[in-house]
Image (cartoon, rainbow, N blue to C red):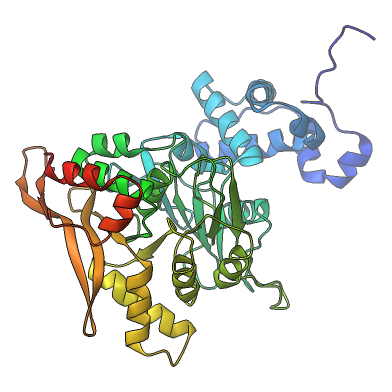
Length: 459
């Protein structure tokens, strides 16, 4: 075997057959080199270089080359074309154009630099020209754009196809995920009036634990200690909050307290939980096909999860009739189950669960639903994103029981805002209730009752 390495076919001259198939690109290549006029617009020069470069790249060779080497080869090819065409480009412009081409071929185009920035939490695309990001709780407009609507539409198709879904005019909305687990929602034309819309919720590459959340100011060490004890004592927990408030991050942190020997089944619309236990079974919903058949809903998956011998069932988000099946699971021996819900307060969370159960099971009386909620849910954690950009635990509420038709709740912790510091951040403290918990018998069963009271007495 020869020791000479075979170079990919970058910059190769096209054959006559290819020339007949690609007349525009070959004509540009075969024409005598002419200097680009000084008054030509930079955008026109970049567009011409892009077209010529793509015309001389062999797709098979591109697929076989590592991204790092591909960047170097594309940069070299751009330099050759620029020299032949007498286009004046400096090294920075060549490097930037090569990076854009590689991102278009292998990634998500202009979104790649934003995805690589760990300080960005959300990316919001409102058409090809308007891209916004959230950094440290504040929203800014990003200095990137797509070439046109077709470029943006192609990226949307790539995202959907990667997870076996489709997005087009007949199916204009889709939930998907990226390879790193980031959650994606796409709205396509004709629903999107200004071009396709993309919303990306990024997740940190490193798993966040309670110590990290305390360091971020999301909660105090006292609140973290109580939540750790609740997870260890297999409390059934509902995490409530608005969009982008940190519900999934909180659930991931609490899930780290699950014993490695337990079998955990997760049910999600788009898989985004990052459980670290070895015995995790992940289930994901499926949308209907072109004929409107084959849909698998969260409720179907929750019912099936009950037959999979789970120790805990974790539902990514409860939105509709699956709330009834979630309560059934929590009431039938699957202690330590968790879920998230959209609500403004812990009291509103119970009301929303009741309404969703009625959506899926018409005819059940409110008293029966509330009784089942009280028997199933032990703790509700309310998280929120506040005006200063911080995400904080606002309430930790225990569901104590029923008094008549009213559910009795006890706010173990409730956030109080004391004022605003010179840096614009809120000064806060927690009002603490040191009453004996309604789940005292469960804490005593796990020998955690004294640890619970000690945590409440600590400051």
